[in-house]
Structure formats: structure tokens, C-alpha cells
Image 1 (cartoon, rainbow, N blue to C red):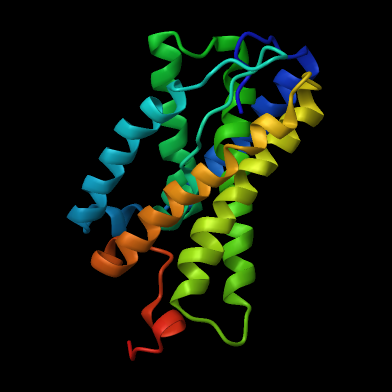
Image 2 (cartoon, one colour):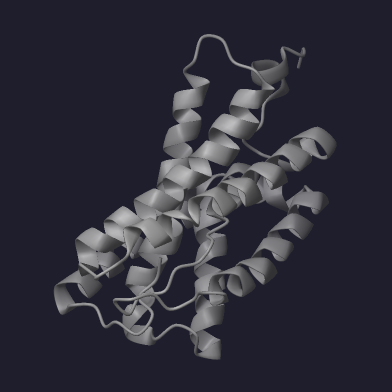
Length: 213
């Protein structure tokens, strides 16, 4: 969910700006930069994510109420890189949309909060919950986190956006996007964990497959 043609209230703008800048600074300070610099495949994946997210987010049909709605893809980014690099990646993608004129400067903090911060937080919360299970397997990670976690992330973005902006939305119409979001992220995470598990930073063979380290 993004603001589309809406202009946020000043209080909403400054709240989201402060919250997002704080989160971004924490992400930059604690990101696993050394691991990223020594992992060429993950560097390539990061570049691909930065190039893909702006295109995904720009495909945002206008909805009644003036907002836009699009697939997020942030669950996949969060699971591959962890929450710190996911926030950094989403921030760069948002700046690209700002530069090309798709997003307006006055809406940037709110858009980033809804499209990046909320789905990343929900994804990591779902992952933490899955890791607390006494008995787990690969399907918990791929379907529970990748598929259903991304659907929850999209719903959370809608809910928070509704609280902040109070748009006049047809929620039944918007809910139709939850399955494509789950399918997109679930498919990508399933493929990556099967064929390129070393790229996915949050995946653990020992936890989900019982393999020795």
C-alpha cells in the first residue's frame, strides 16, 4: 500500500520520518556488511533485489480513496538478507521511485514505512515464531513463513495504512492481492532454499532439515 495521490498529515509525515530514520540507522549500524562483502552470490542477489523492487512497486493500480496498492516482495528480501539489509534495500528502491517521480517527496516516509518497515517487521516476527516451534521442518519455513508470512505482511501494511490515512478502500478488492503476494514470495523462497540455500541468510539446515552443521 502506498499513498498514491494522497498527501499525509504533517503529524503522520514527521512520525513516519522519525520512525523510519531510526530504523534505518539501526539497520545500517548492525547490518552484516562483512558477510555480504565475502559472499559474491549474495551481493548479486542484493543488486537484483534493488533493481526489481522499484519495478514491482511501480505497478500500483489506483484504488478508490486515492491510494495505490502493489505487491511488496519484502518477505523474500527479508528472508534472504535479514531485516537490516532488507530495510537498506527497500530504502534504496524507494529513493529510485522518488527520483523517477513515481513517489512524491512528501509521501516518501509514509510510503517507506508501509512498504518496507511494516512487512519486514511482520516477516521477522513470523520467522521468530516459527523458530520457537519445538518441531519444525522445511515446509514451516517455505509455506509458513514464505507464503503465509508474506500474506500477513501485506495485510499488516493495509491495516497500518488504514489507521494512518483512513482512506475509503474496498477492502474486499484489496484482499484479492494477498494470494498473489503469498504465491510470489512462497515460490521464490521455496526455489531458493532448495537450489541456493547458501544465499538465504535466515535459512538453517540444522533447524529445518536436521542436517549436521
